View: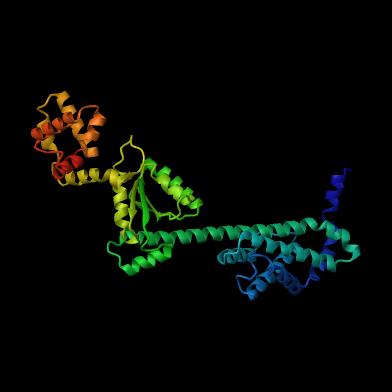
Length: 389
């Protein structure tokens, strides 16, 4: 017979083993098992000091050994073990790390095995060996059920926290006139300083994927970025980083490189208004534009949208006046005005257009004569900036 087969047979209980095995289990003292367990578990990091009352540790310890012994009597567990759920849930709720919990549960096996070997006689040695597999599988099943309950409770806790947090965030957007007290309460619950500046970004459509990646990177760097949906637009906001060169600050810089609307809010009180602005900026992005649409970059377009929506013509009269020019002249005039509006300097415009300063000045004057709008007068230039945004 192959050695492995002999070992398998040696590790399996024999038909005549049951009576003596039950006698050994009956000889186990649950109170002693519990006290030995308690003397060890209180030294486990995460249980020192115990985050739950010692009386509760003792009670669940006693119930665990009772369930384990009953499982050994039956040859293993064939269903849920009630105390495993209780242990997993309660330890997750008080924040005991999973590693500490598993270390504590390993003491269950050690204490149980030591007790079995103490009540066994020398003649019981082979019988105990034959039941080793049952002991291991029974304890493993108990451990597995505790882990599952722990993980499920942590997930519930995350969902609860997320639900509460999203409710608070929704309150910031739904309440048009929140009191300072309410703002302070929400800020405190979110871990924010109500007066500290916030970075607010918005993305829509396919652009939300890149924003979600940066949200994940930001949180892996140790930050917290809150999210909210305004229709089909994803809003994200976070406190601005104060550590230059940090991973958080690097993530914030990357936000300026993706297609989002980006606004700096003075504090949580201006969050809603800033988020709406970020949304409007994000909606300005055309398919071929890259980088964040900031207020500095997009204010003129927003102004144009508002004026057009109000039915106010901005540069229709300008376009009509330019229509009398030939195509070549019109192109030269518009090019000169665009360049000048960008820099505000005739010299810089001349350098950019590779022509003489007088040429630029003449074209600006010709534009003013034709349209009645002088690009060198700020109040009139503003209409061109907005109308051509």
